[in-house]
Length: 146
Length: 69
Image (tube, rainbow over all chains, first blue to last red; front, side, top):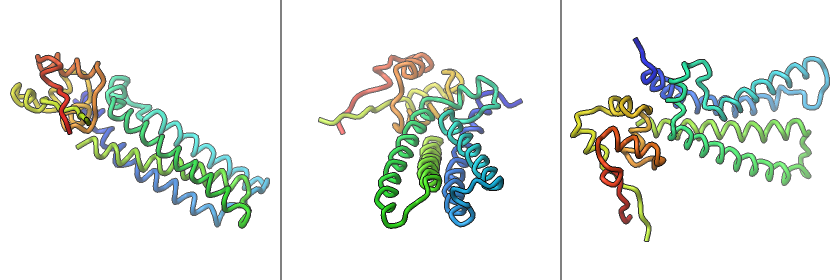
């Protein structure tokens, strides 16, 4: 029988491997929607697209802030959310924040030459922040697992 | 003068014939916590340092020292 320590260990390894892919997926999704998204449209299709992306982004943000493992037994989740994981997460969130701010700077600098719809600017900034935070989290976790 | 945290956890753990996972279970923390502290990747909180000391039957000063870089 797998105990809470082994469950936490397995979850930690899975999280370390999954986080960079989640980050890469968020960044790839951002690039993908540039061509497919009808920015600023209020058609029902565009609203469904916007709602789906907002739901996805909010779930990813909650995953980043909480460390995941929502359906693990309480003790396994506590073990998986240990001090090194919290430190890695804090560092990843800091990196994501700095990248978001730099992306804001770029948007401000580029806007006079290539005006961006507010929706697209928000999408780029959120994707860059979330994506890089997940990549940084994964790298930190892989390094910590040894 | 720049100082860093050194530790003797691996020496004490091996003297007690414990794996990282066994020490983690004795302390009530994850194996990753043991691994990161033992390898100097992460400086633990006072609570975790005391758990190491209790589990390895040593003082915190025996396990952790400040050394010049």
